[in-house]
Length: 353
Image (tube, rainbow, N blue to C red; front, side, top):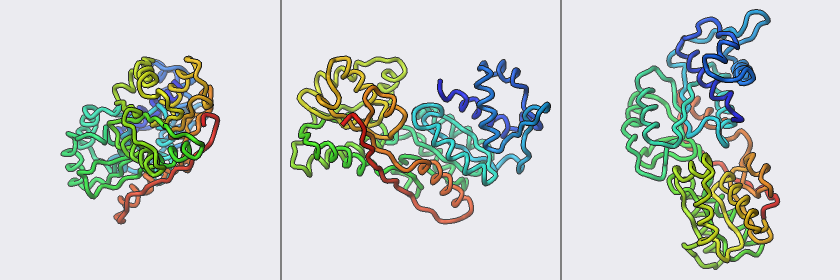
């Protein structure tokens, strides 16, 4: 796994925060054996901890812990759907750089976008001293049974910043999100100006980003005087994503090609990872991209460049999401009033449209 070292770094950070290694870390060989990883993974994780200022490496002395403030409320928890997958590693690195410069250690958790795991993590955080929380909520488009725990954290005076989408029931919550309505509108409008009049869509149903991107896409179609065809829009869930991305089951995309795409000449995809899988399937069926089907998606991630046809994708300013969310949290912790922020998209035209 390309970012396996980040998972190890997160585990070592948790041990550092708990005081498991008061003076120095175990040897590289001992870490390899304890965590069942390669020497290269250990070295990358240690280099990352050095970059964050948590440890220092001295010739002949191993990895020594950098003395910091007393452990406790100097810790910030960062909870995301995933730690070492898709766009999350870069966001996490940007968050940690800001926090570490301000003298805070970070605890990293992944929910896998599951409300059950989210609840376990929040319960654990309520049992320990905590300075602040940056969290990407799980399945933010659906009713969530964990609002009671967020309310307990709020009553406990724990500053919180939500990523991508919060919960509407938490009226005063601070959120750093993308302009997903505007992004959906921009993606569809790009295709319309290139002559496409039948544009299909694939969106994720259980995250609020998917619903907002869908609304932007349909609004652009409506404003262009084109018909709104529900039969051209496919919705998928977190669980269906797992079967597609982790197990390679293409059933949902095969179904899309057969029943939704039909005579459409373009598609707006929820993100690059689904667009990459769609393009590969289209090519395997001898459908040319973009000559037969044009594709536009979101995130401008590594998928957009590794795909056989480079994907036209929406991007926002590098380091913006992580850096801004960390800064807003720091401002809250300093007692300042902060507001939610929305980040605009920019379309990066490549080969798929």
